[in-house]
Every structure is written in structure tokens, then in C-alpha cells.
Image: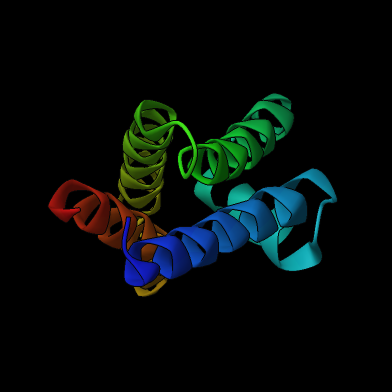
Length: 115
């Protein structure tokens, strides 16, 4: 396992964890966006929990690689769904936001595969 892989994985986990925390605590900027996108309020807790679980899974993957790979793939799917949701809401200026969160997860998966 390389130092780069560990650092990028920790950064990806922190970013996903922050995103999940912001959703679970109903940060104003998250609530406004989800309302604009038409995401039902009943989905907010499960979505926040999914991001938090993905963050924990990425960290666990440093010790049990298959867990990290599964968590990473699930987070990539999650953020892909977020991009689709933003596009469906025609909020094109917001497309980069989920991509910013997905990028370190993709990088962690790539570095893990290269190790």
C-alpha cells in the first residue's frame, strides 16, 4: 500500500463523511439544493447515512481492501446518481459539486488497484 493511496483514501473518506454530516445535520446549503432538485425529504437521512457509511468503508478498506473497494464503488455510484439528479433538475451549474466529491474516491480506487 503506497503513501499516496493512504492519503487520497483518507481525503476521500473525510470529504464523503463531511458531505454525509452536512446532509444529516441539515446544513442550509444542502437543504436548499436538495429542495431545488426535488429530492424527497424522506430520502435525506438514508442518503446521508449512505455517504457516512461509504466514508467508514473507505477507511476500513485500508485494513480490509475488499471493503474499501466495495465502499468506493458504492460512493462512485452514489455520486453518479447525484450528477443525474442535478441534470434532471436542470441545475447545470451545480454539476461540478458531486464530481468534486467523486474525484478523490475514483483516485483512491485507482491507486488501490495500482498497488
